[in-house]
Image (cartoon, rainbow, N blue to C red; front, side, top):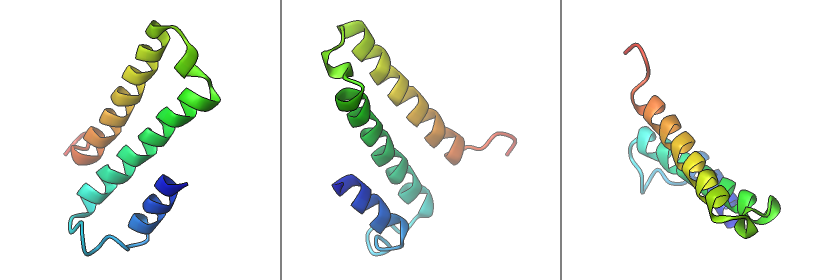
Length: 79
């Protein structure tokens, strides 16, 4: 709930005093979202009790997709 509250506050403009660039703010919000995804995978999908290979695959997926989203936002194709 804390991560959701922080994301909402930052997205609503409450962090204008701390993060002057919208691209940095967006990257922070994406990172927070993927941290929440990792918690959901670990606790609700019970990946935390899965074999090591599945846990690593899920972590690689989270980092890969999150990194790709940030990279595509910062460096859009065709520009």
